Image (tube, rainbow, N blue to C red; front, side, top):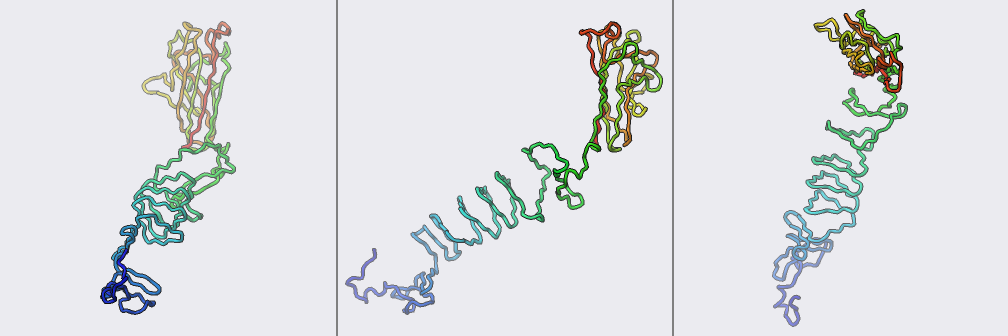
Length: 362
């Protein structure tokens, strides 16, 4: 509490009284408040405004405004119920904005930004760190908006596999004629259907060669054709390759002529493919390891694969042959020699053989 003027004369107290600097009444113009000795204070008043010419503070440090810079420090909570326009905003602690935040200038974030609600950015934004969006994310609001992804390592780990509906589904592609922009096309525009998709052809033989008519190897041409495994395919493109896979299960009578007296050959339209003809007269793509009378209940197997390039869109026919030079063993498909000579019983195995042609696009 200040000292009262009770009992004091004007002559002894006027120097402590406050007044306008020119001793006039309060009007529309700002005038400094001075004491009775004419010393101006930092406070100016008028009938329409109040002004402080130097630093301003409330309760020492609860609210301070620096006169030279305009910097303002608020020790407590700032509550703003109306619109606020800020040319720049710096916070050393957490900032919570319960309503809309509209920023027309640049924003620099050196730490984490958490937005529990919607975030709308109408201007240019640059993020130099990681961006994690855990909710729905919309980029762009018009067909002319541009989204550029400079990374070549884009992952989408949670996609669900679906069956492609060629009539209705769409596919994303990059358009080489339009700056590699990503565009959507209907799956049907690729014209992938049963008439032009990569093919698989199979000849599956599960019968067995009759006892009196085995396949007997020969040195004529490419050898004796194993006719029951012949398979044809018409490639979709001259650049297509064909994977030829053959599984031959058989028995043989060649114990007296050696265990490798013949070889298997594969031909495409009559031309041998895959043969090893270096330094030998008995050559082919795979050996014929026969099983003779010393093990008449046994079966032998040969599995052959070759990736061929027919370079054609016309039908091509693949055949397997049994070729020999001086000894000519016989071969029974899918059953043993004892099955041939002694008749079948539940203890004698009978199996299957096959040729599969798989087309691959370049």
